[in-house]
Length: 384
Ligand SMILES: [Zn+2]
Image 1 (cartoon, rainbow, N blue to C red):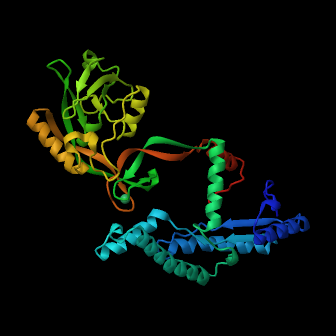
Image 2 (image 1 turned 180 degrees about the vertical axis):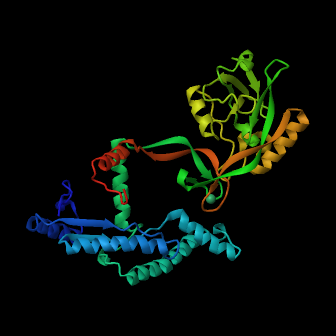
Image 3 (image 1 turned 90 degrees about the horizontal axis):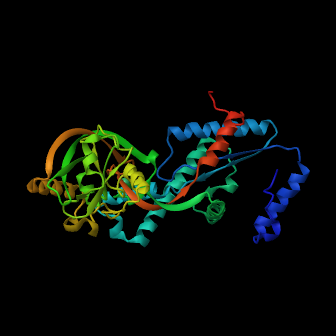
C-alpha cells in the first residue's frame, strides 16, 4: 500500500479520514510486499437502468477482482454511479414533455428536485442490479459523482492542472446545441449527409460596379461576415486584392484577402469568412487579424448584430435572407448540394459552430505518456 507522498495526515481534519490514513500507513509498513490491485468501476450513468453492455463490462471487472484476490492481492473494486449532468437533465426533460411541461414551467428549484427524484429511483435500481450480478465491490466505499468528497477531488485536480498551465480558458469555435444550450465534444455530434443547397451570393465591390460572388450552404451566417477570401493562386480574383466588398443588409466593409486554406474548386473559389460561426474561418481570421462578429444568441436566435433580422430563428432568417437577396438581385443562383451536418446526439437539433468561451485541457503531454505506456507494454490490449 503506497500513499501519495505529499499527503500529510496532520492536515486532515476529519477523525474518520485520519483513522483510515493511519490505519493504511500501519498496513503499508506491515505489508510492504503485499501488492495492491485497484479497479475504479466506470460509474454507470444514472440516466436509466443497466443494460447488456453493463452486464458484460461489470462481469469482466468482477472476474479480474476475484482472480487477483485469489492471487493474494489486496483488491479494491470501487463502485459508484455517475450524475451524467446534461444527459440526465435530458431524460427528465423528456418525462416532463409527456406531461406537456418544460423545465422552465417548473423553475430551477422544482426542476432540480425532480432530477434528484429520478436519480434516487435509478440509483436504487442500478445498485440492486449490480448486487444481483454478484459484483464483488467494496460497497462501504460506494460513491455518487456529486458527493462532496468527489467534488473536492475534482476541484483539487482542476486547480493543480490550472497551475501547471494544462488547463486554460479561451474563446474557440465549439459544437453548440442551441436547444440544450451547451457545448458538445466531437464524439457527441452525429454526422449526417443530407440534401442541402448551395447559395451563390453577389457582394458588391466598394466604389465599383463589379461584384464578387461567394458560395455558402448557410446564407444566414453572412450577417457575421468580416472578409471575403480566395486562394493566392486563383488568377480570377487577383484584381480584387486589397479592395473591399460591401456586406448586403449590414453594409460592413469586408476586406478581400488571399489565404491558402481556401479551396479554389469550391463554389466560385471565393468564400465568405465568418469567424464566429465556422471553425475554418476562425483560423483564417486569427491569421489575418479580422473582426469577430457573433450573430446568434445561445438559443440560435439572431441577435442585435444581425440588423433587421434580429429576433428570428436561424432557419427562419435563412429563408427571409434568401428571399430578400433574390429581390435585390444579389442572389446569383441556388444549386442542390450534399451537405454534412452535425446533430446533437441527445436531442437531434442541428449543431451550430459557435464562438464560445470554454475551459480546455492540453492533451499533448498526457497523450504522449499514455502512448509511451502502450509502447513499453505497460498497457496491454486484448486482443492485441
Ligand atoms: Zn441538444
